[in-house]
Image 1: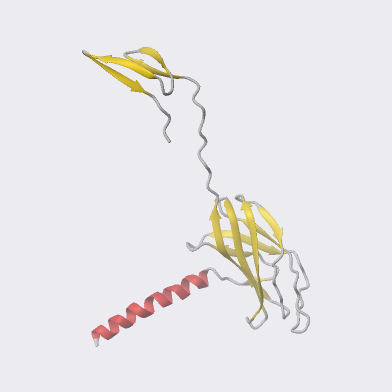
Image 2: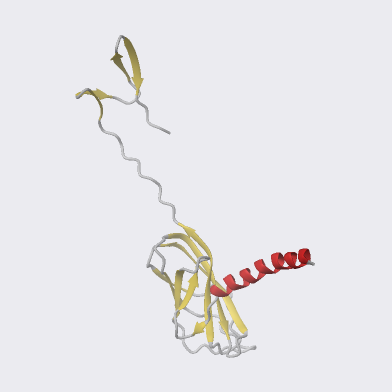
Length: 183
């Protein structure tokens, strides 16, 4: 019996935690409020506000063009951002959703967009934004050209050139040193 109870806890606990974490990322707000998309850690990464007012769709005449502004509220610059915008009626039933995306979004930068494929079939009361892809921009290191190299031995400076041998006497032995750039 204890083994059965332990197995039940091990199976149910991850499901409950997964439901709780997804609920954190999916907060619905009224149409006049700013919708916030969170990263898996619960930190705000995107904020969106509706530009389109008077959204009144119906089953036979859905609204297909809704404009909104998305702002990068994190300190990270992204090479690519995409997400889902979802609308709900007064009873909390989903009545429209669409996708959005942007390339190269800097920290605190905003972009205006629509949501291709969106078809709102109600008069929505709430909406939400979920970030589905956040690809951070990778900055490549800058390699500065080396204009002058020198080696200092006991306070005496000797010029060096890349890929040219330099002979150094240490005690009674001669050592040849070649300076090369690393790959």
